[in-house]
Image 1: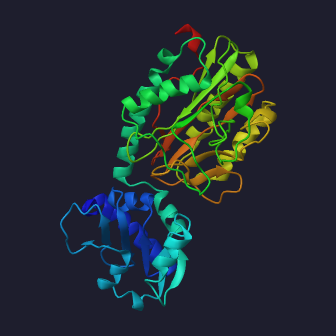
Image 2: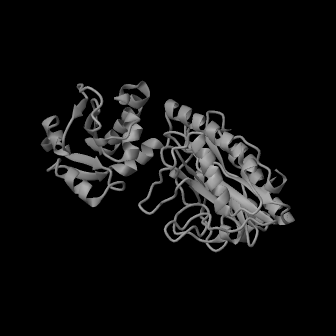
Image 3: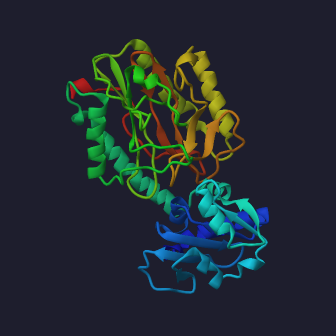
Length: 388
């Protein structure tokens, strides 16, 4: 298994440290995101992580690799007990927030005397700080993300709707290696390849916990809804960086012709918050302080009613990302987290102007020893699509 790579062993050791700290004897991983984290692969089966010792991989399909001391081919998960004396395990963590009730009950029966803990929370904590290989993969994906955005102006044609333009961007993403989706945490968090917002649709609330909404369609109420792109509209493009296993996140704003002066003023305020707030951060910076500093800047500019939405205003300005687009930490006022070396966060202070659309930018940042590194450096000014 790829878990033999030193970087994957480092991830096992991180989880084992958390298990030890919480007094849990073992962790069972079965979700796609969990399997990717510890093996770099999605397969049908389980990974068993003891508090000490080697992780064990139980693969139902595909069985493409020969068995080893730690890789076992099984027909059903109940065969785990052929290799591990689960009756002696007093406490076990399962991914309670990532699986169905039926799957959890089936796994629970493998550990008849064990106290049950939530392994999802443990995995999310471990994944907050990225390993060297994870950072390398995020960097690589971000370069593809930047390259796609560079051609967006050439994709616009007069008479398009927001959905027409998004389709062209999605086609370009796929041509450049996008896997066609990005993973979200949460049972009611669904999105395809990102969102494009313009006009009043930028202020339309969504049931999903993303920074901005958009009416979308009945089946997927988020993002573009068929609004014609007309002169005087801002076009905010927040398409996923999903060019491999790991995500990057980047938003840029475009226009159809000239926008009102207020749109440019608020867009520049977003850019200034990136320069003055996020770039002054580093290891030890409170996530709550980042959010509160943004609010202070917004209030000073008299822009509270436009910040992070209108009808429904998001109560955060950024989030961690990695295997999923919405990982920990969350940059919000009630957060207890601080930035740590190796965290990767998206910072997205945005504004919505009625009838015009949304303005502002989003970048993906790596927390380094000396501060913050921008992994998505690309032009940040509002680009007029009608001039290209």
